[in-house]
Length: 445
Image: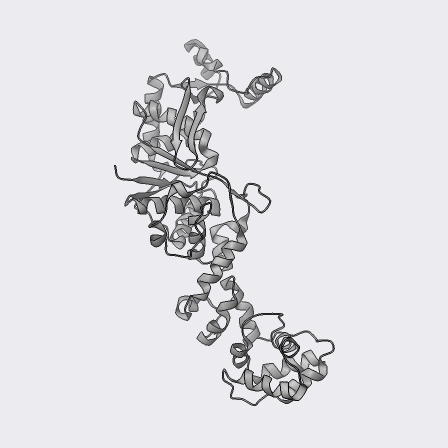
């Protein structure tokens, strides 16, 4: 059977690294097995779904290098969900409910006080046709629950290993709201079957939901369909807690804005939680060795420092042509070659462009006035090339007897206002004599 996977984001916000990890895993798995990757936009939440978020998701996936073979919106398939719901009603697996949220809350609290699990009591299964008619005549509209089977659902998860969900420990899930809106558990199952999905690769927070959906698959399909599951453990932060989707700094959009390269993000996410070292390779190359069995069943620590280290490697290998349109206006190839080895993020290039072409003000360096005035005295005339740094510092060494850090650190601080950075041999010709002289004077004041 040809592999078919899906990535199914809800267009209610921007893609977070946790979502992106699932997208990358699905894409790599599909390409490794010469299968199809389907983008499904789960947009049936009318209150929260936005077209602009759907557009942003597609843009972010393309930025990451993730392309799709098929794409559809759930909002275009409402008739399919209505037909599937009718089949479940006729089979006695979908039943109407009228309890309010307050009534349900009271039931849950009562069960907890009695030391019982707060599972729905299926009271509405006893509803007579007359009682339903009376409720609707009084202005109530039913929402619909799926009648779960008895027993336990089991599967061999491709990441977590053997899993099982005791269905009786779960409330019959609501599949359709009172306003007729179908919910995720239902629409996802209908679409997975209709799309011929063979593998569902998603977060470990869906394990219990997967047990429920397997029961729903059987009810819709007339038996268990050949769908395999792989649940990726959740990402954690530095403190070991769940990585919050509310961390806007970890949305793909914000990472791109900050100057993180897509190849670094994809390379990091592709091997996060495995024993393989992250590599900033093209996605097609990463697909050749992608193996779900190598993903650890333990939560994976998302280390922004490791991502930045990978990004540094990407930036070091980029040519001027690769980045010219994203550099500050006027930035030249010699500038890029001078600074790229010291960047964690492409956005940091702007600060160094200010150093070589702007009007930065260095600090007054206490105790170094005499040395800096001597440096100004022996500063060679222009024109300058890449050899000017050595000839200038050689002359300054002879004039002052200084060497090592005592020689170089005050000059770096005066010329760049930074403690460290790119090689001054490359920066000095870009700074030019007028700026260099002015900064030496300021630092010596």
